[in-house]
Image (cartoon, rainbow, N blue to C red):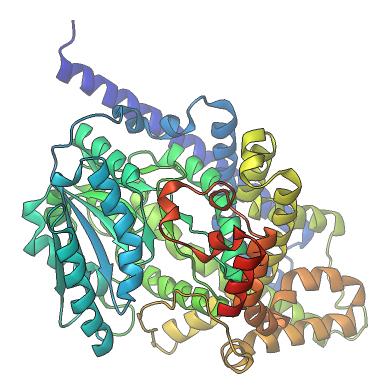
Length: 607
């Protein structure tokens, strides 16, 4: 009979063999799809000229992000439909906790903030503290408010409000407020300072951002799973958006809700113990984080050197290198965040991430990293490098069309059948994560009800699809211009706090920030109308969003429109249909808007 350690060793070896097979299958599917689409591209546009070769090369750059996303979604769909417990299928550690195990590990709850509203931080934190006390689990927890704020008014407000918060909860859960005078290394430096100053006091840390919300039952579940698995280094939750009255956030987070579950389940199926870390709404084991996950300082000069900005995936790679598992728990209802309320704030956040991800090229050769970790770092770069490839393809096509002598465009040996097939396949792959979730939800009556019914759900899918067709080219050009600034002119962006409250965007500001999109869209649509009016439909799909970028930014930021959309159910998510008890105390305007005409009138006046 095997003793317990030997049985565990055999189970670990079996799990490793399973993951190896899954990764080999996934790599084959991606490689075969890449080869098939490139072959189809060569049929559609035979590479007999320099322009055709360049066009196909650019198309190849766009493929990894599309193909990997497609296969993640396809695998996630089959896991959702065919497995009795999809979460346990992709993360067996999820079944290692019954939910009633005693808590023994001292756990820090960390909220990293920089120039955030203290009232918002407290609003999102107090329901968690109350839930821990009600569950009688509070003795093992300690809250740390880790501030990097530099605004004098906010610093004064933090000192006052957080002192009152600590006094209020002192008899149940200790709260420590610490502000760094200089935010060296940004958030990763904030975390490193905590690890060196307080980390030895605790076994685990739950990481939160200022816009994060986690109910007590979710935190307790994470702690119990970590306690049961001593080789688990990071456990990341599936993060979904909080109900919002911002039109932009409402529709965007509805789409994210659709795509995230199938995509995350599919990715977890083959990534396994080499999973993601998104920087917040996760639990970490502090000793290996302190001992093995210090961020390197990148050599050289310019915006891609110095301190690592996007630290999360690097910490995941270093944790895995140290021999600890990094896994995701793809369950909805455990973890929430507030989405950016406007296109301009979304753009600002995304360009900040782009800047950080471009630093990864210096980390690809770090010794000892797992192959999957290296792929994840490379893939994080390709996510943004595909944007300039798409923009370059549109630019080449537009210039060629503009310089052609005939009204119907340049005479190139294009196979319309192969081209149409290629376009259909790429569009299907692009929307696959959402298509997978839409099919899964429509096949489950309870899921349809959770979104307000089948008709409401389908109409919201249509609205979100239009939203993404407009948003995608806007962001692709924004990525391209920022990469030119970053790589050619060696100028980076600023890492400031987000404007998280719903607010309007003036026309003048939208035009100042989005005039390149408007100009590019006007040029592309104008050339197509003059030279090839029969292709205007394709042009509108590819570049229509650029042309309407300014009115789109203004309209989707309107607080008044947001309240109306919340009232009639556009962008509705399950938490608005049946409000979880944990969210009631947040008094979110999107939930309050359900309260009838009188309440709606009040919210409209407030907006």
